[in-house]
Length: 170
Image 1 (cartoon, one colour):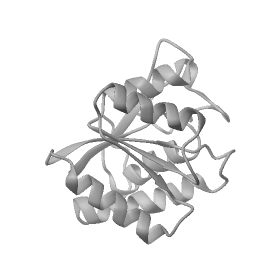
Image 2: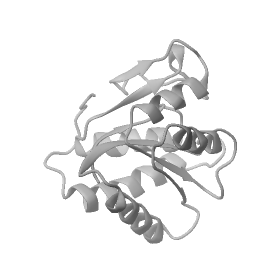
Image 3: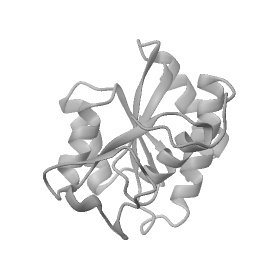
């Protein structure tokens, strides 16, 4: 599956790393965030345009909306999915959406290869990818690692970017 849009909940770590990878190459991005743009570091910065607030401050409400609005969910963690990342996987199962959890603590090349193979196995030629996973406070550096991994994945799946930078919104 070629990725047409990346969405996420805007939380620190994997969520923002996914949004940054999209912004880096000018790919459309968006997603649902909790009411008040709630995040562990205060509020999701307004520089992440195109994000919509749910009616609730609940992270789970936001996570479920993003699962529903995507064709597939990629959960990036260091170790095993726990807590809210495990709930995101359960929400994908509940709504019949493909979900892949990838441990980025292992070899990065292996992680990229695994994600690319999974996307290729999906029965859609193009779709919206929901990116979720570990928070920056739980895994320092998660945002940067996610951005790097997804940038490589996007390059392999979508081909080289036609533009760099930009603020494409959904």
